[in-house]
Amino acid sequence: MAAKKKFRVLIVEDDAFLAGIYTTKFSLEGFDVLSAGDGLAGLKVARKELPDIILLDVLMPKMDGFEVLDELKKDAATKHIPVVILTNLGQKEDVQRGLKGGAVDYLIKAHFVPADTVAKVRKILAHVS
Image 1 (spheres, rainbow, N blue to C red):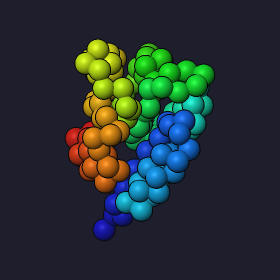
Image 2: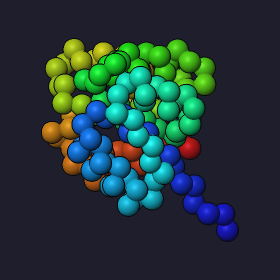
Image 3: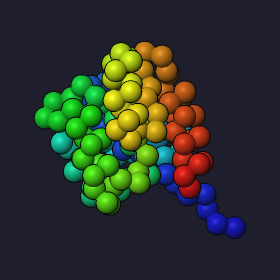
Image 4: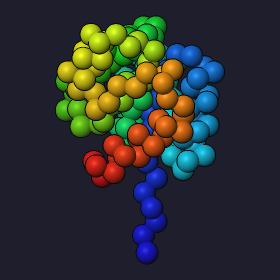
């Protein structure tokens, strides 16, 4: 019997404390976790490692999450990777911008505990794998 595929998640988050919480939770749930502390680094890791899914903050140094999303969706190598925006920006315009830009979901950090985020990611990956 084949082993269950271990999914790779890229967490692009500039808050080291939050990134650590999500990294720990996803690791405990059996994911391979990659991380980046700013938008530009996140884009580089995504292009090099081609993760199965990306969790992307919006307000970050060097390149914001919307810019990263635009670049990912323009690149033939990364445009297929599902991106979940994970931010505290909850304005309707921000949500619409993220979803129109190609994100598969838009989660407000304050409304989701890490376990909920893992469940959402599993549901998304079940539809694309």
